[in-house]
Image 1: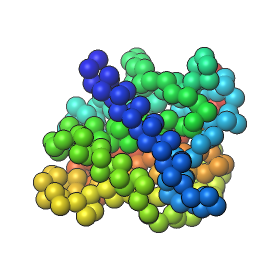
Image 2: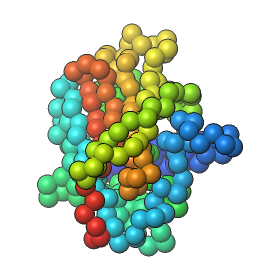
Image 3: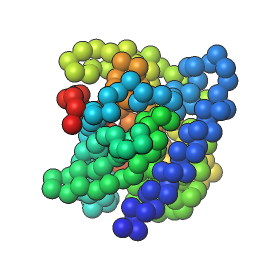
Image 4: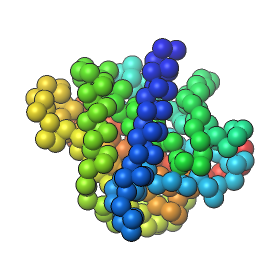
Length: 221
């Protein structure tokens, strides 16, 4: 319960960061990384009876308990007062993650970033506050935006991809136990329900990977 409460608080903090990024965006520069990552209105065209399912797969050989408890399905549904409801499902276990205003955007981005922060702190040690601040900083730094194609429901879809490297120039890289090259890749398309096709984090070695991928849309609940 304490871990869940910590995660919820972190998600709310990142929600505020997302709003801040929107206001920092320069007019007429819609392809800037922060505009894409924190795009607003991404849930507006989705029926409130719908459920978006994301498969999360975590690999962490140094922390097998993390991998075992973090691999599962995250369902995004809609609750009263137009709130986006996130729930983690693993076999018979269901765990509420939290509820967030649907009109702001898809809260999966906050969930993804906060779980990466938590996973790194739990596996490599170090201060989660320090890790979170470095990741936050990378979210508003310039990064290349790539045009890519992704497959969704049997079709090739045009998308954009942004990769962030929060510790690339960090003076404490040598202390990060394999996480110094951590990269977060967000792939997005307006042809994808909820905007995010995939949210992936990896260390480029065998230490850690976390992949969240939207599953084929199956309609309403």
